[in-house]
Length: 169
Image 1 (tube, rainbow, N blue to C red):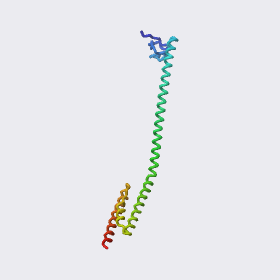
Image 2: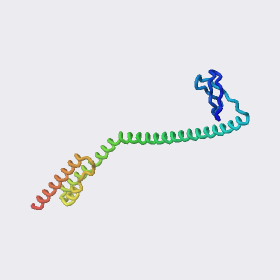
Image 3: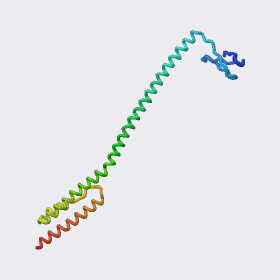
Image 4: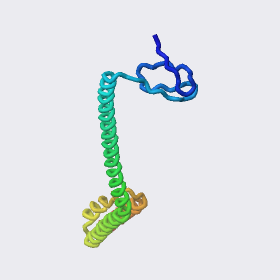
């Protein structure tokens, strides 16, 4: 059977809620503190204390997990920043490096052309022809490739003409 208390503010009946220590009037909002025997209070305090400890531990565990997750995210972000920085540095130097590599390749091919011309002057047409066939651009630049393909074809043509000329004389 439900128990009722009289509201100290307006006199209305307040229905007892067994677990509640303080009742609140639905009509005027006044409060009434119920009498609870000391033995029952001790039991409730122990139960509440146990619950609070568990809640605190759970919150601490959740907080630790959140901090660990944030730390891991920071580590990932820092790694990404380092990678992006390295890529930016590489991007800043890459055109210069690529240009130097192209210059080196071009210098090697120019030297090979000089050797071919020297071989032709000395009548070593087979050697010149072999070297001329190796005269190829191995980079990605289509303009350089076209230039050196044209150079190779002209040299091969010139070598063959001189071979025929010398063979007929």
